[in-house]
Image 1 (tube, rainbow, N blue to C red):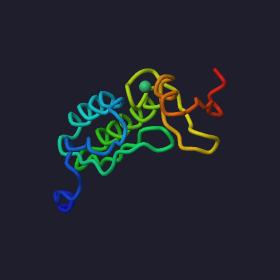
Image 2 (cartoon, rainbow, N blue to C red):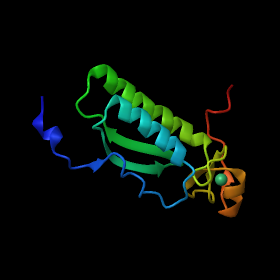
Image 3 (cartoon, rainbow, N blue to C red):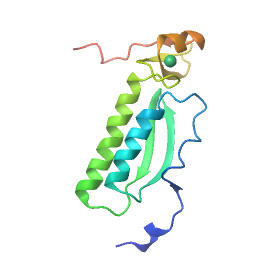
Image 4 (cartoon, helix red, strand yellow):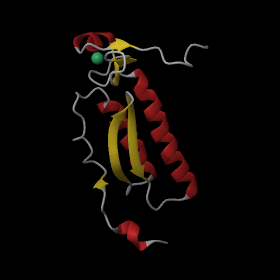
Length: 130
Ligand SMILES: [Zn+2]
């Protein structure tokens, strides 16, 4: 029991879409995730949503829920983060991790968006088996 979790210092769920400089390719991925998170924990809070190394990073706090819901909550986030590597973050088409320049920054982009922004697909080490 921790009363401090009632203090709402973090961004309430639902006001989460102001963070992307790019277009809305991950919009439905995130909307879908948030719908499921909301079922598990109606009072959950989002700390931060961003893209890091080309993939979605979704930081949220499940709040006051039982252990099982909490586990499911973070599993769902993990799933969505993994899925983001297959979805163009600009237009939502099937995509690959891409990089601008040799040491440049990485984004998950479809070939059309990658070409437009001068990104090239990268082959991530480890994904070559299977
Ligand atoms: Zn695209």
